[in-house]
Length: 337
Length: 169
Image (cartoon, rainbow over all chains, first blue to last red; front, top):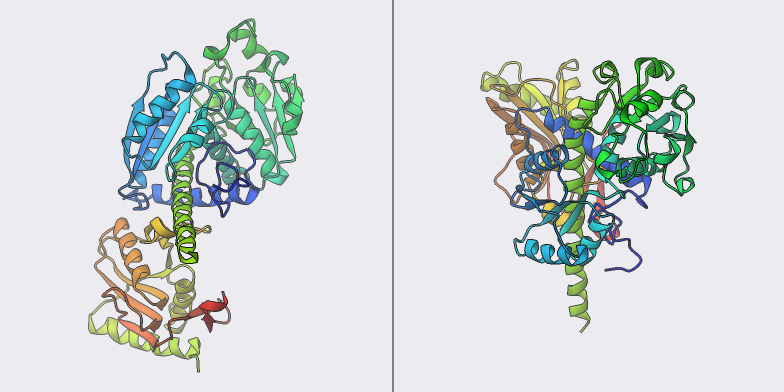
């Protein structure tokens, strides 16, 4: 592998794994969105299938529970005509690194072409991508607090379809930023796509250190932060990740940072409301707001299938291209001798 | 001498009308293969006095048979078929027929939308290099090219045919 090339990209700069949005150029992110648009059209047909990944095997390896992400990845792979296996691997392990490589060896014996991975440890997907056999693609379905790149892209598709040009938008991300891989992926994507005003709204206890590297504007008051925004992304309060009392209570959080009708009125009159799901009614968001026509929450699920189809097919495409390039290189070296 | 698309299209329009009349096909729906086929289709519909007919646009990127070797083209666009395919007579239009694989991909894709009553194939040019048993019902001109040459339609206004040397690309 070319040492100058980042792990995710092949020799031509095309996706060969999909691990994180960090370092991916704007053109590539735009291409993912454009490709997803085409797959949305496929989802509107009677026969919602294209033969791109026919005969290939996609293995979903979920070390963390997930229904929504897992099912949309399954649907995406099936609509590409791939064969899909889903493994819910138990997380009871002694040493994480050891288990991961052992599990990986077992999985490789199944000769899957692609693994979609979700793991509780940040960096797990990168680790696997570094150690997996060549021509096997790794897709990150969420790793610890680090990244959830397909969620980031489906959020961007939602924004582009309903709000258009990123360079004209004010986008607010509200809630438990500290524990959220979705927030990280969104911040990176928005910056790469040229959003000039990315706002992060959270209590100090739910903000990570080092936010300046993301180029975002931090607000501790939701009333201040929501003024005139075009897009509001509400994050779920990740109770299972909070190991210490970072908040007094859920009702306190709602009182200070919940998206009520009143607070929504502070935003642009045509602002849209997004949430990665599942929503906690009355904790992050008022029920009536979640059910209003400005909420894109269910659209996000549909877009998620299209985006995952785009990512899976583009990554498989990059793997195929690299295999071709490697074969050509080997042939040339043969001739030289 | 390379052919002029405009005059070819006049002849093709006449040929197509005869072809459809012989088979008693009335009111077919037209589908162009993105991009060149769509340009030819629009031109053809003009020549047949059917400019206000809805035109379907097929993007066959997801049905190509070379995905495992070449991967996805970086600029896919959605297909748009603004009419029902089920039991419909179709006229499928492309600019250049070479191996026939694009047409095969187009047929596969069309059949995922529904079962057409018939498909009539119209091509502006046919290059004598077919790899599959697929022929146009109506063709503007048949050309023979040396191995290292390709032909390309530029457009949409004006439509023109260019010769390309593969070695120079």
